Length: 362
Image 1 (cartoon, rainbow, N blue to C red):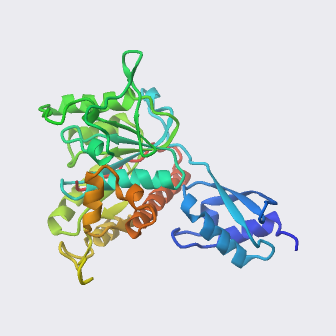
Image 2 (image 1 turned 180 degrees about the horizontal axis):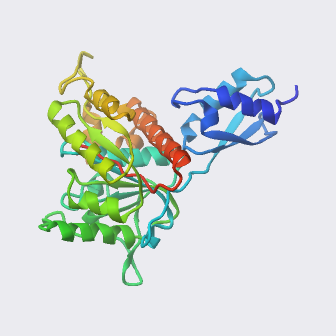
Image 3 (image 1 turned 90 degrees about the vertical axis):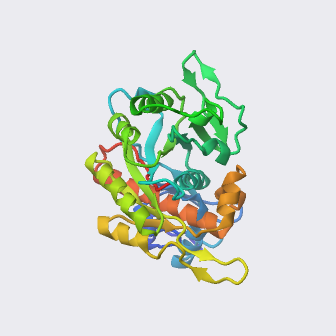
């Protein structure tokens, strides 16, 4: 049986849908080539969104849609469009997009979301870095399982080599001070420390740099917005009313500095009793969805209140690497694809924009 033509494959991509992707496949993937393989045809696709985990589902959907593709294997090649640059940010030339994860208040799981978002993007095939910009309370060193005495290598007396952790390039104030050192700094000093970590770290060819922001809407957030080409922001919240009030402030701040909000992540959305399976909305229900609708942005995902998330991050192996085939890791991977999709859409509509910032209520 002959294989379908290039035109037929492109037409099928335009209408093909797979679980885990909110748009037709043709919006984010294009045909490169179809060639014979050892066990069946091999289809190479160019993808603007990292989605390696969906390759088997894409192959199944295309086989169902067209004849002549039995035994199909799909290979996805990422072509992640970089954001715009700002004058004076040469150190970030090897960073494609900056995504800030932020929150209007602490305690909503922002840092947990940031590390799992970074790991999920990497699991989907992207090259990812993670910057812990929470100067006053850096936590990523613990969450990534980096020993307390580990420090980054210094190059030429002023540049830091990022520390590799679970496949991520990482930098944190926690690598530079001891756990018992309080950061008693005024705003300008903290902002200066953030700029140094951003511009004196030798990031290596990243598609995305995830920035774990400190909670609130103060000097550090404004410094990032004004000095760094941020492509977008992800806002983290919980369903409770007090968290939603601060979530609104975070969204409004990003709007004022003209950084697009890519969407909202709702943590602690529901608790499932491990003994009986009873579901209970301890902190309210649907708050993230309401905020997202009010501001016209997507709800990127909702995470349960699950003790494993806390235990795994405290133990240095966040959920996406601790249980990569688990249901919670699947939610984080869905969030990562939706975040990347929103960014890709923004860049098509306004290609001059810079990298992305993510906000949360941590």
